[in-house]
Amino acid sequence: MKLLVSNLILGLDDGRKELEILTAKKLKLKLQSVKNIKIVKQSVDARKKPGIRLVYSVSCEVLEGISIPNSPDVKILEQVQEEVLIPGNRQINGRPLIIGTGPSGIFCGLILAQNGYKPIVIERGGNVEERTKKVEHYWKCGELDTDTNVQFGEGGAGTFSDGKLTTRINDSRCDKVLQEYHRFGAPDEILYKAKPHIGTDILKNVVVNMRKEIERLGGTILFNTKAIDINIRDGKVCGVLTNTHSNIDTNVVVMAIGHSARDTFNMLYTRGVPFEQKPFSIGVRIEHPQSLINTVQYGAASGHPSLGAADYQLFHKQKERTTYSFCMCPGGLVVASASELNSIVTNGMSEYKRDRENANSALVVSVGPSDFESSHPLAGVEFQRKWEALAYKIGGSNGSAPIQRLEDFIYNRVGKIGSVKPSYTGKSQCADINNCLPNYVTSSMKESIGYFDKKLKGFGMGDALLTGVETRTSSPVRIPRNEFFECVSVEGLYPAGEGAGYAGGIVSAAVDGIKIAQQIIKTFAVPA
Ligand code: FAD
Image (cartoon, rainbow, N blue to C red):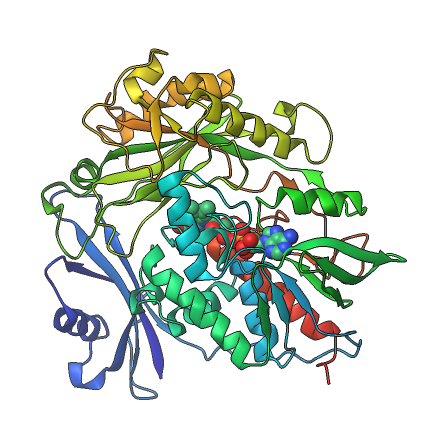
C-alpha cells in the first residue's frame, strides 16, 4: 500500500535518517515496516525566527492492510492513470508545424514527437550555443541581434532566467513538466521543493537535451528560421512562409511565439487573425544586497546550507492599481533583455547556485487597456515601446540603461550609485527613472515602498538600486481561441503559450503547449 505522509517537521540540521524515523513515528510503525520513503514536497517554514523548520511530505510503502493512524497527515495514494490519448481521424497535410522553441513550443513538440507526429519546429533565433555568444556580445558591446537575443532563440524567453518553476495554475500537467525537465537534466530537487528553480546554467543543457530527443523521435528543428507570413484560405491555415524562403505546407500550425514577437503579431493581424488588448504590468528592476534579504527572511539561520539564498514576494493593492514584486531572482543578475533596436528592457536571471551579491526583482505596477493610447488591438505593444524608447533616451541614447538609487527616485533627482552596485549585464547610466515611466506608475511605486519596507525591513533602503524599464512582464495581447484551442476564425491555427495570452511563466507556458499537443493528437491521425 502506498501512502502520503505530510506535515513532517524537522530542524535545519536534520537529515534523511531523522526524516525516516519521523515518518515511521507518524505512522506508528517500526522503521523496518516503512519502505521506499521518497520526498514529495519540501518547504521552509520561516515564520518563527529563531526556529526555522523544514516541512516535508513523503510517499512510502507499507504492507497491504496494515493498520495506519486516522490522521489528516496520512493518506492512501491511489494509482493515477495517465490519460490515454486516442488519435483522431482528420488528416494532417504534411507535418504539424510549431513556431517557437520556448517552453510552450518545445513541450508541444515533445508530446507530438512522443506520439509519433514528427513535428517541424521553427525558431527565428539561433541554437543555445550561438545564442549564448550573441547575447554575451550584446551585453558587452551593445550590438543587438533582433532575432537572437534574451527573448528569442532556442529555449525561448526563459533560457536566460532564474528558471523558477513555480506557478499559480492548478493543472496535473505541471507534474509532467517537472518530470520532463528532470529527465532532461534538471536536479532531483525540482521534483519536491516547494519553490523549485533550475538556473540558467543548467536550463541551457536541459533545453538542448529536449531538442535532441525531439529529433531522435523523428521531429525536425530549424534555427534561424522565422515565420514571416501565413497562408490562410477559406478560414483554414494551409502553410507558413519563412525567411529562408521555404514555404511549409501544413494544415496544423502552433503559434508559440512568446510575448515579444511584435513583427509576427503585426503579420498575423494583417492576415486577419483576431487580437484583443490585455492588461500587464510595468516598472523597474530593484536590487538589494542578498545578505540583507537573507537576514530579514532567515535571521540567525541565514547562510545555512539547507536554506540557500532567500527570496521574497510583495504585493500592495492600491485604489486603482496593484504594485508588486515579480520574477524575483535571489543571488542573480539584472539582464539587458531588449529585442528591438534603440530600446531598453530589463529582466532578471540567476545561476543554479544563486550566489551573486545582489537580489533582484521586478517592482511593477498593473496597467491595462484604459492606459493605452488607442483601442487598436496592438496598442499595448505601442505602449511598451514608448517607455522602452524613453528609457533608451534618458540612458543617454547609447544603449545604457538608466539606473537610480531608490532615495533619488523618490525625490526625483539624479545622483550617484551608493553601496548597491549594479549587476546589470549591459552599460548603465545614472538618470531619473521618473522620466521614463508614466506618473501613475511611479507614484504607485513610491506609495508602496513604505508598505513593503514594513513587510521586509530594509526593502526601502535609500541605496537600493533601480534599473529601468521592465515592460515585458506578460503579453500585451490575447488571441481568442475556441474550445479546441484553435484561433476562433482560423481552423488549424493554434495560438499557444504566453504570447497568445494563455500563460505567464515557464511552467504554465509548457502546460499550454502540452494541452495543445494533446488536442492535436485527439483531432488528427498519426501521419503516415
Ligand atoms: P517564449 O519563451 O517567449 O518563446 C517564444 C519563441 O518563439 C522564442 O524563442 C522566439 O524566438 C520564437 N519566435 C517568435 N516569433 C517567431 C517567428 N516569427 N518565427 C519563428 N520563431 C519565432 N518565467 C518563469 O516561470 N520563471 C523564471 O524564472 C523566469 N525568468 C525569466 C527571465 C527572463 C530574462 C525572461 C525574458 C523571462 C523569464 N520568465 C520566467 C518568463 C518565461 O520565460 C516565459 O513566461 C516563457 O518563456 C514563455 O514561454 P513561451 O513558450 O510562451 O514563449
